[in-house]
Image 1 (cartoon, rainbow, N blue to C red):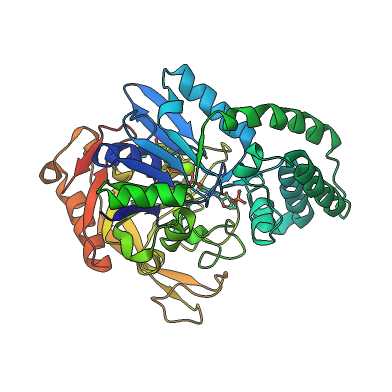
Image 2 (cartoon, rainbow, N blue to C red):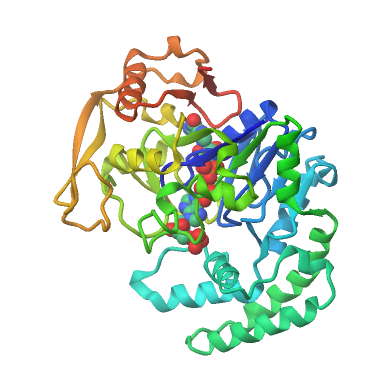
Length: 423
Ligand code: GDP
Ligand code: IMO
Ligand code: MG
């Protein structure tokens, strides 16, 4: 059996959590492959709402194995809080949640370094979620990191102190007062590692491959989105991991020839949280309307998300990088009520061909737009594609034609049930 991958095609928050939860009944294992608690994946069903940061979005299906892969970075404190919250809702996680021994740990000093580095950048700050993601991946590639497996081997205290010393030396370069924050956070960290130790810590590359060899179905869940990828995103305003499909191979230990479907998920418009270029951004009443109707506030930080029109230049680039075979469009309901809907089709003055996502996006770039007629009837109650307003169906066909990939799911509301499946 091969593995399917679901990942974001924009700047994150495309609705990955909702759709992974929706698709989970079709799989035996749901496996997160990169990122960490910078992610906030929202699930809604039966009038309840959950936001997951580290734990895969299949967790509400107790008969499915949920795996945190080696490519993920884990903050034990945030993980412990997630576990508590889910267990309060009645889930028994010890039966179906597994963690890779090779996943790296976010230390209290990683968080402090993230904050100190962002503060020092001033106006050019990345807009990081301040969860310590960048410093933790730096230590991973710098070969200094602490891994989940270290929590159950001797010498943990020694390794921890050595890495902390290195971080404190780095922190001396910054004019950043961290002592109170660090003391409090360290205490919580040492308590919370007990929660991780309670779970099955596994050689997850063997586990995933053995599932595939035994004809079991695996869905790999991405975090962030393609335009935040460390190599191909709007660098340096990106995250520190490979969010593209290749990240599912390295983040789980699955060979490229074992990947079958690649689900690329996108919002019917575009949002971005944090700093960095956003050519189709609407800093006007349209942007305000999208933010208000779409409740566009970050699931992890609560920050207002920047909003704009759908960007086909960026989407085509993302489809190419990921080898997307199936598109999933969310938040189609949010576009209800606009008379005209714009779609960015080219970037003028970018120094690259207008249809390409350029090396650098600056203010000289002028997006060109196609204009499509909007629809007035909210599709939230509808469950069949054929029942959708004609102009929404046309919007869907237009995007499919431009990207040459079918849109197989249309999401029309945050709830699990508000989903139109076309396969
Ligand atoms: P993720 O990070 O990709 O999992 O996405 P987030 O959870 O950060 O953000 C998506 C937000 O949109 C969440 O609040 C979801 O509940 C909500 N959402 C998902 N799909 C839809 C949809 O089709 N319509 C509406 N109105 N909201 C949606
Ligand atoms: P999900 O999985 C949206 C953004 C931050 C910042 C940049 C770097 O919920 O889609 P980091 O904390 O990684 O150093 O921040 O990336 N960012 C996200 N934006 N959704 C996310 O995750 C994000 N994770 C990071 O806002 O601009
Ligand atoms: Mg999110």
